[in-house]
Length: 171
Image 1 (cartoon, rainbow, N blue to C red):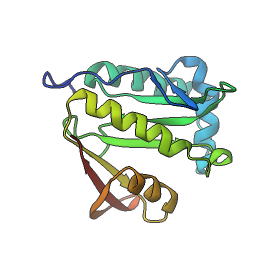
Image 2: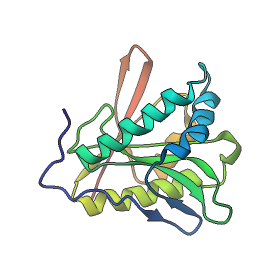
Image 3: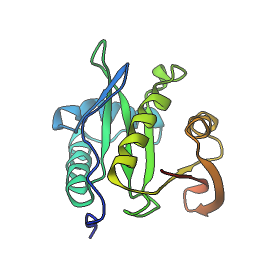
Image 4: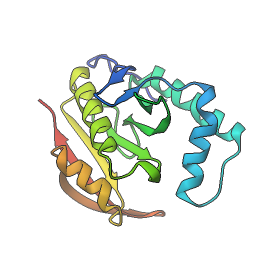
């Protein structure tokens, strides 16, 4: 079981940038998250499956103090993806930053903007290092991470393929 670390503050669940807002998931987000998952390829989960994903994400946030948050554009309020901190392939002490946005909004700087807000939130928790794992084919994500000061650490391989591990020390 994951447990919140007493040495860390919980991550803020409400983040705002010039163009974006991020806040906790609700079950009403299920249809949009389902569409984002479908856009990846590999099939479309059922609405019930996505509601279970959201429920598990909320429980994990309670346990770890880390959150993956839906991203909405401030001017229109539409869901465009998510960004946040997860345990993923890393640890509660040194979590991973993760993000995914609809393809239709790629190239507008939203991933960098959201990830920068999450990076600031991670600093506020008292953590000293973050990780990210990215497929070598994902050049746009690698560019986002480089803009945020992440540096390549190593490469690993699992059943899903090769992963580039990047890390960033926090002040």
